[in-house]
Length: 119
Image 1: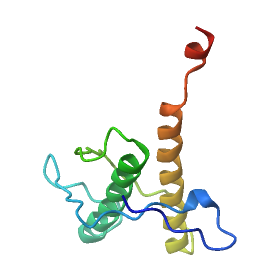
Image 2 (image 1 turned 60 degrees about the vertical axis):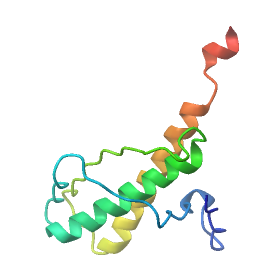
Image 3 (image 1 turned 45 degrees about the horizontal axis):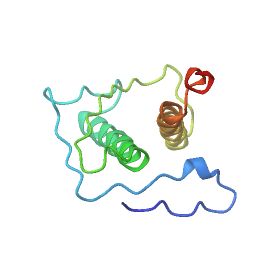
């Protein structure tokens, strides 16, 4: 497992993600991923691969039972209606937000439930 790099000064630590392993192999289960509306098919494939690779890396690094096991990630991306002037920054913020959501879901799943604590 490759540890995450230290965050740059002034950066939220939740915005630093573990580096994906070079041994990750992506295999579409059913054909090719659909293009994101408004993007070329090549751009969409690159974007989908970045998201899927990072999500799988988060699962592998946050779930000790997933180490060495295949991880299946299903993902569909949709372009928002309003396009900001700085599209690169908007895409980065969407990516960071999505990865924070994945991390929060993994933490929530691993947190002991209130019912288990009461019983």
